[in-house]
Length: 300
Image 1 (tube, helix red, strand yellow):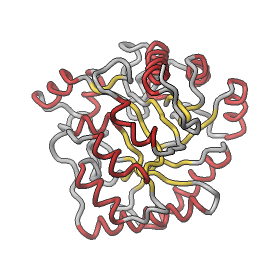
Image 2 (image 1 turned 180 degrees about the horizontal axis):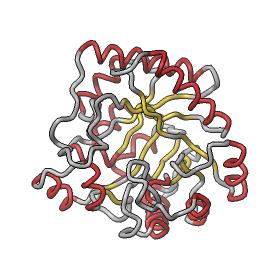
Image 3 (image 1 turned 90 degrees about the vertical axis):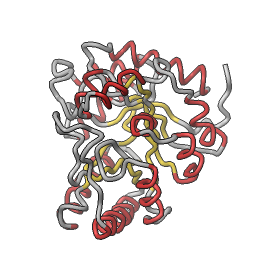
Image 4 (image 1 turned 135 degrees about the vertical axis):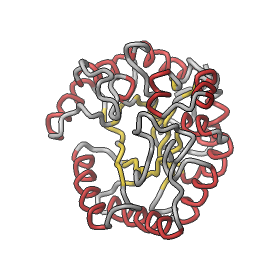
């Protein structure tokens, strides 16, 4: 087993393998307590927020403490390109304060203006939004302001590039990184979304290693991805077909992808986040597979 000298890296697993935020019927029968218990049982240190988790932070904190795990971060849907700043600010502050009460240090921001990711019948490789110069300005200025608001309570934001949104490709990630303040906006690297989109995760991690604030680890099934392209499937249909899987059950060498972070003093989370149909991919089995892979191949 390799040894990771960077002991500051923490490992977690998001609840999306158990129940899906975009398709709540997936895993709809699974109580949140089971999710937390199986995250802990598999040997992870923490998780992210799922749609079933209690909205009262005190209730959730008690459940987390009983299992010895914590909340690392959570997804925040921004609408900086389609809504007013005042609307975005109000939503962000409320969500920031909820996460802060739970002890989280990171907020995962994703712009959802005109996204097609949640549309069941829109082909994922057709029709994604392309931002105008004005929208890029609204997005980058708004993200910097989110960063300031996060700093007010000792938190950070990381931007989550995502399939079906206006920040998906390498050139779009580059534009967002160039247009935002490095001290205010970090990058959330989602290996699965980079692979899905056809980007090079090794290149992205290498170039932005110093700005990576959070990492989502998921792999793809190349045969399913090819069918998604050939059959013009949507993002949600791709998930149902099993396009994503966990590290250790796919083809990607995550050590090669993440080596700059392992070598460079990264001190954030490696969060397994592979949305699947729990009726087809047992979540606890997936969690154990991923945890074993991270331990044996990344030394974390």
